[in-house]
Length: 114
Length: 112
Image 1: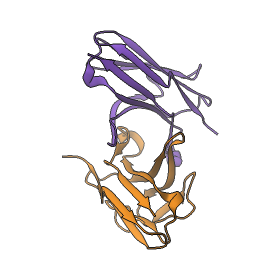
Image 2 (image 1 turned 60 degrees about the horizontal axis):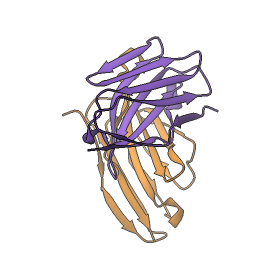
Image 3 (image 1 turned 90 degrees about the vertical axis):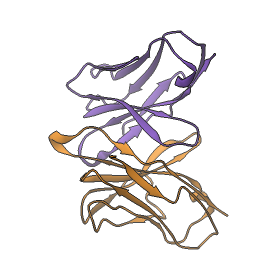
Image 4 (image 1 turned 90 degrees about the horizontal axis):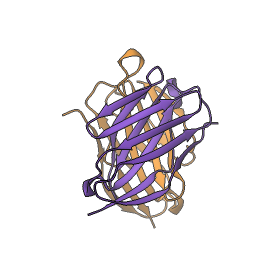
């Protein structure tokens, strides 16, 4: 089944403790991105990657890092999480160019930073 | 900067009604528009994708239209059912690395 898989689904952590949220897709998509969803603010893009070793900032990149060492994986790294990063996070992927068929989203990771 | 607005923010209707959800965007230079459904605490499920060269797409009881020049899209749901209750999100893409710009959604409740 074609899908985007995020782990973990739920995470509670303490301020300052480094964490990684993993994202993997099995559709051979070139493009991958991370969004956060907050009440009243909607979904906002954090980082995106056009292909392996190519990443760039979205609208709200502060406090986050990403890497794209393999085409299928795009982990989101919070080096020193703070309470304002408590949110629902989504990973998405898509093909590019003429093969574009829309964006596929993962099931989300609910992160709480205390 | 692209802005996407969805009206209404919330809607409650009896089962069986046909309904229309509205989406407007400020920059008509879009690459495509995608409608999603989100159930509480869950991920986003893609409903319909409309490429910029298309006027509408249909899937079962759903029909989405796109008028790029006026910056509008509508999602038409025929013969609504309680299982249609969810938040519906409209998102546009400018192409390339832009990713998606989302509206804040329409929270839909279908009363049995």
